[in-house]
Image 1: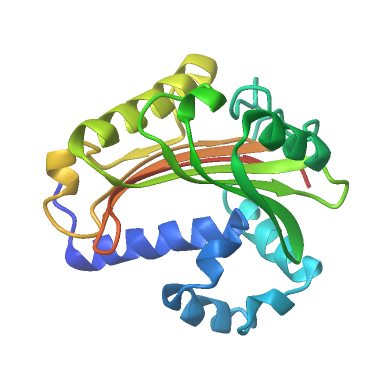
Image 2: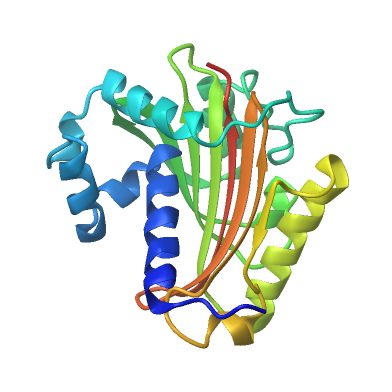
Length: 229
């Protein structure tokens, strides 16, 4: 496998952070790492004051660079949470029924943030989910699902990555983007080692990223986004 330079590794990490923002995961927007990027695009702290139009514009700008040329044959997310159909009210009911620790968050757009979710509740394998973010558009319907697991051991990282990638391949075939070595050994070689698969369609973008972070260890993130304009 081709060696990745330190500069390239840093670029991959920054790319991951930007993609997180474009999925509208506002928790990241509160971190120190996010501040230079936010300032560069004209969003200043506190992000509590960000407008829905600003978030929507950032999201759309990012999606413009990710969309493919054809509509998706399917748009998988997690069990029982279809894009543009599952509502914020549905999500609140799901959280109450499952006794999941969730809170509503409003930063321009509306979100439901849940912590410590058992993956079985979502039909995914692997360790407990550190954070689940559900993003809702102006109509109150689901437009994004973000599953983040950090501080994983080698087995947990392997299971989380393999399960997410195989679920997408089963529905969608081979990804448009596939780079990096997601094995725990390769990721642990240095900080910011990254592997990613990504599916790009006119109406859907799905990304699975595995990375070794200095502050969070081995981490796997699954992102499922509506890309409809």
